[in-house]
Image 1 (cartoon, rainbow, N blue to C red):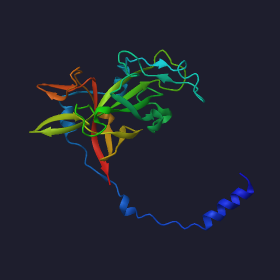
Image 2: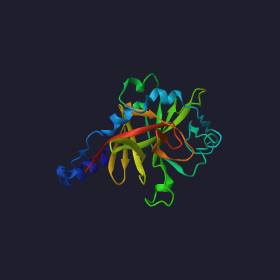
Image 3: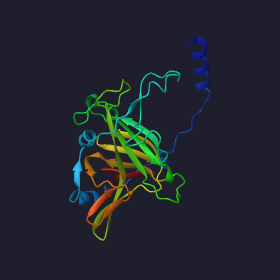
Image 4: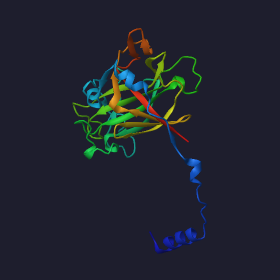
Length: 244
């Protein structure tokens, strides 16, 4: 930076007054921890992040061929084209991204796994907030060995549905994030922190991942004596929400 430019910047700073921010207008409030989670723990099989990654069987593709003409592209991968067809899927759209290096754990290693990528997706049927066909809300994808290197043989990914637990007549249940459009996502410690353009911030507890019944019907929640996760074997519960 030239001496002249530094002088101009300093002159501008000295002649510009900054109004103090009223911090009381930006005080965050946090809800209590969702009590329905403890009740669901009693009836559902718990899983860990490692379990979710061990069960990952969707294989991403190398992106080098399709990205060859893209300026500054180095390395990466594409979502699977079949089983499931995530690359061409028009219902789910990728939104936020975080990694195990954001968790704060040493070396970004979580339960023996390193280089984990987590991506949030929005169900486009809920984009207007008044979909004629109910969508499933928001899902997240955990990618094993999701670095920007070549595509290793053991790279794979798995989806999990984000759900909101509740209690009806003393019985615990959960539902998808209907008419919710997520924004950014951060993985910190055992929490997945997801922004919501209406509510504020939703916080999901990764120590309470549940393995549920997968169904092609798209039904989410308690059905008879069973708990369904729509098209997903794993669901992750919302534990808190934070708002202004």
